[in-house]
Amino acid sequence: MILGIESSCDESAIAVVNRNGRIKGEWVHSQITKHAEYGGVVPDLAVGEHLQNFFPLLDVIRTEVPIPDGLDSIAVTCGPGLAGCLGVGITLAKTLSLRWDIPVRGVNHLRGHAYSPFMQLDNLNECEKSDFFPHLGLLVSGGNTLLFEIHEDLSISLLAKTVDDAVGECLDKGAKLLGMAYPGAPELEKYAMSGDPKAFDFPRFLSKKNDLRFSFSGLKTSLLYRLKKMSDSEVANRFADLCSSYQEAAFDQLVKTTEKVMTGQRYRSLGLSGGVANNQKIRDDLAKICQKREVLFLPAQRKHTGDNASMIAYAALLDPKGVWANDSQQLTFNPNLKITDLPN
Image (cartoon, rainbow, N blue to C red; front, side, top):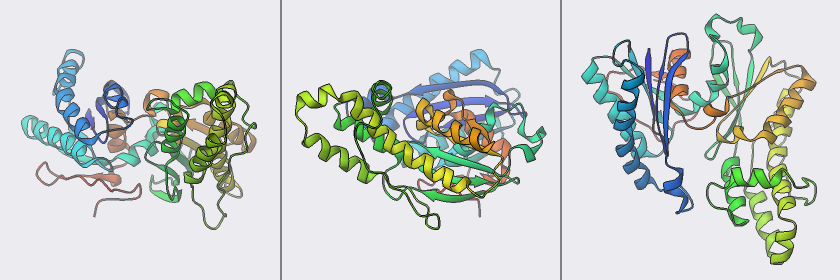
């Protein structure tokens, strides 16, 4: 079995995954309530919380899974992420590696998200890969908005990324402008459900086919200026419509760019991952274009859309090319890793 450790931001997570990709146990300690009063993640606070959370999590694991018996390796997030937070996870992984005399390997956090839609399959290595590849993936979170292709050999080619805000950041900042507490995107979704997505004409950035990219800063600015022109009573009366129209503009860009890439290409499946993948609206929108094009839609399971250790262990199992297979003394972290980064 593989012990997975994830600490790239504000989730302290540990998981145990066997060699068939089945999850034997997973545990996450969220810090959202700690950071909410500050309106966003505070790096120093996140580091302190990780230091307090990981050892109690290990104690919980021992009551449910007999570790270290049966473990043959440790997989830990080595980037991208907050430097101090990554350092806590790396240090924990090195310590356990030395104590238990098993190897530790670093995993690219973004590649963990990219492969997470396949975790719902029984065993991808035993599946007929022609049923899933080439695979188009959309990673949407608070820190990243990436469109990429996964080939049958599990290599990844980046097709498009945001040039400014990530879509999750755009939703959170829009929610903050509307008076919602951090993280605001889930609250924004709740209000959007009862609103009219066409009530307000917010801008959509649509890139050219030969220059694919995403951009969300203009949308956020448009909402700011719209609210300045409205009275408090107007905002209150049309609150649901504002939320729905703003969310629609953000997702419309994602869906149209994804569909543009799918045009003329024969993708076998489309994956959706990252924290924003928890939103039902983006799931429904992408499911529709997949149905129209007869492409298998593979959204990550909701429990695996956020940062989690299961996807880190799974990535180490599935894609050894994307793993830093170092001994405990050589393993380091890199806060600025890209999804395509591989070991030297």
